[in-house]
Amino acid sequence: MKRILAGVACCFVLGLFVQAQSIYSFEGLGSLNHQGMPNNVAMGEVGIGTPTIWHINTQNPANLVYNTFSTFQVGLEVDRRNFSGEEISGTDTDGGLRFLGYAFPIMPDKWSSSFGILPYSSVSYNTFSEGEVAGTNGDVAQISDNRGEGGLTNFFWANGFKIKNKFLVGVRATYTFGSIEKSSTISIGGNDVPVSNVTYEELESYSDLNFLFGVGYRHKLAEETFINFGATFSPKTPFNGTSELSLIRLSNSGSELETVNVGTQDIQFDLPGTYGFGVSYQKLNKYTIGFDVETQGWESAGLESQTYNNSLKIALGLEWTPDYDNVSSYWKRAKYSAGLNYHKLPYIVNNQALTDFGINFGASLPVSGFSSLDLAFKWGQLGKSSNGLIKETYYKVVIGATINDRWFIKRKYD
Image 1 (cartoon, rainbow, N blue to C red):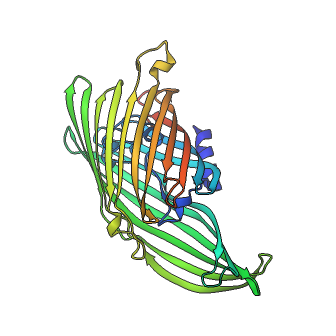
Image 2 (image 1 turned 120 degrees about the vertical axis):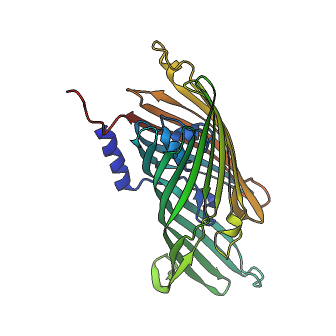
Image 3 (image 1 turned 90 degrees about the vertical axis):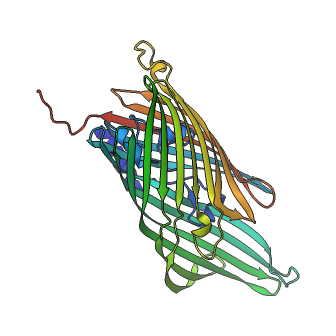
């Protein structure tokens, strides 16, 4: 345990919350990350109406009530992307710490709490273009090199409460913070025109508080067989930040000749209102089938200078355990998961909406006590390779660990 926690601390010091490069992360706040744990990724990213006692539910705080153990989860993710389009191709691989959370019961079966940190968005792109300056009859060329990096992180504190035997409520407070740095270097030159190099740098820094509310309901159908319902709501929230703009004049060799700080201004990026609903059919320690749908009102959020679609996400997942009580077969005690998801993104590129489709599967392999090693894999496709867009085919591998124990319990006997 101490070695694991020390390793996590080292990851924080090294700043390993990174994601693979995505061409489309130049839009808005960047590529938006799934706010679930490794077990949710393996199950198609469902979780709003899918409770579990073995893992932390970061998608619906009401379901934390089922965490009767003290639960610690951590996970690493490796992301590889292939890019293809009109005369465009390339690959990129990156990864690092992606999941971290801790949940514990305050009043077992009545009130549980959790806190953790998850990346909300990531920005990592580098695009290059060249052409001629309009009206110069091809005598003057222009080259643009655009780069961006950074992202936003969610630090959350959530609580789930049981109001009656079947009805649950929860609330999650999230402090979202981070910075996004974008630069564009433009080179202009040609016949009888000296080369001119200018870099525009913009640093956006954000920090603000937002809330998510959740409810849950469990109905018993038969012995150890249940149907679960869940719903979440997050109101539209002002998201405050600052923007610093600088202009840098460069020599032909790329060294800085002059830097002009244009100034700093306050900006406000509204986070959209979110509505989610989930349902699952569950036979304890046998199988669970879950379905989620979530929509975000980006059309009335974002920045006034940008236009967005309302986003929609649909996820379907299955988890099953061949024989939970089998003491002679390790693989029959493991949990296996599979699922798929469709996500209509809020960003519009070349007057076209972006969509993301993924197929997921994975397993939770039991280790000492009630703990597990969590594995997940996702194959996905973002965008398309026609009409001026670029198709990203990506593969994500997640390796996580879940530690379940009864911590903070006073011993009755030595």
